[in-house]
Image 1 (tube, rainbow, N blue to C red):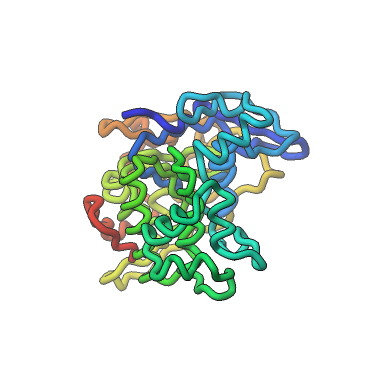
Image 2 (image 1 turned 90 degrees about the vertical axis):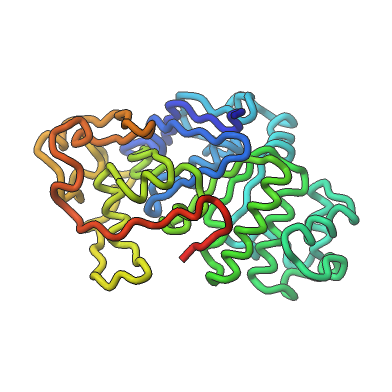
Length: 334
């Protein structure tokens, strides 16, 4: 498959911090693929998405590469960069009300993104909005949150981008609306052949919706697996911790929150960034700088325990039932 997004050993550092925002991040999204990016707040997920748009801080120092559809994004400037952000890659934001001008009509929002009036109505119909012609004349305050999210998705699709970046695009919606929007997004994405980087805090949603999933912690990729493998046999203690504190239908066992908090940008570390919160840590974890380690299923994990020191799960959080895969037919986020 054609690689639409390729980050290779991307490191992003800004002045005044003790560690990089992103540290040797490698991530890919292929044409027609849905790739999840999960992790706690502050782990670097949004910065990773912004790298694909060329929206890194102006004072940032970068090493590594960011390629979208074969083009070096970090080398784009001026008109080339503006064209890249409108024609090649598009972002779907979490809060649709913040993405829309409250005094302008929905039709204005879509046409300024390159859609004709007729094309704008077709886009609204494609994302499941009834009476699309009437919606074009309405302003944001006249639509519900779920309807506005559909409008924002339609705006992202207006220029038929090859890559979509969805940054917590459904987290503020109720479960029913969330499922409807994800189904519509899948159908439209399939019709256009786009790839999708899906950023979320919801591990169960990632399991149901994504083909592959990257788990991020403190600016690094902790684990990368297929969705099925990640949620049935997680290899990194952080992944197991996230699953142990995620509620599951039909399981009445108590949740086990991860102790402590993620390191801030003011904190540096020599070894594994998760060592102070990990119930499976050994003394060497505090000084051993983890490198990605290949797994038999083709995935990778950044943990020295994966090198054979102890079998995964020998200590730590209680395992919760695996999240069933939906085989990518429909969406069951909860």
